[in-house]
Image (cartoon, rainbow, N blue to C red):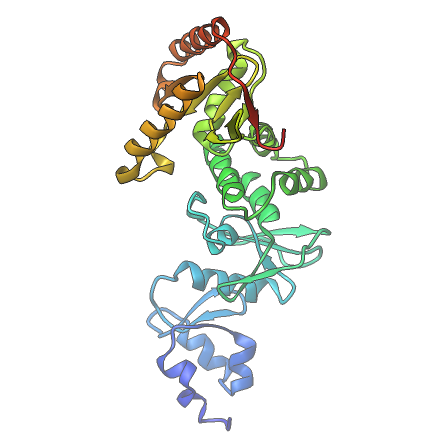
Length: 314
């Protein structure tokens, strides 16, 4: 495009895009014009070195990411919370900074950008036109910068529930990555390795460890002696025929929850299984009372003939 005609370029006329200063110069925009338009009262703004927003509006998350990638260079990729939101994880908190992975020797963190220099730069995935780290890496990178253990647990559990990644992949990422800041992720992984699927179940898992009861299985399908499906309890003690259900509304709609629960409990009763239902709020507010109920229900199951059941794969 000839010098003097750059102002007619469609990106400059009607766009609020984030562009590089190098692209503007290639277009023929004089350096003094770039500077003037980014000054107070101008029509553009410099978000980061080399990154210009063609608007004076407050930048969106997408625009901040675009600016961060221009600033960091072509080999940088998005990780942490910003990456997880592009994978669609609902449990990922809103990020207040853009977290990037970049080769060692690249630019350093500044303003709203966190640059993590690494020798383990993974192959990126493209999500919403943005190069992002694989989910296991993004999850662990995000977890190392969070202080809320429930948020870490929720993100990891959601990714596994959605089959976006496996527990083994998270364990491998923790083994390969830096140990600094990884304590919350390591703690959150323990119940997930045992078969737990949610934050509510993780709370239940911890309470079971405190109860002194024998080890149980988590989230396994159980069948009667004829191979008919009974249920998939949150916790299952086959030795005595005892099931524990954490009946959270998180995984049920209001329309089908009651009917499904009644049908499930009828199958438990028909199979001779003792079942205890607990609300997640009770685990947090009255843990000692729930432990007492667990022990009483387990002892009641011990006193009854053990039903003939099997679990999936057994």
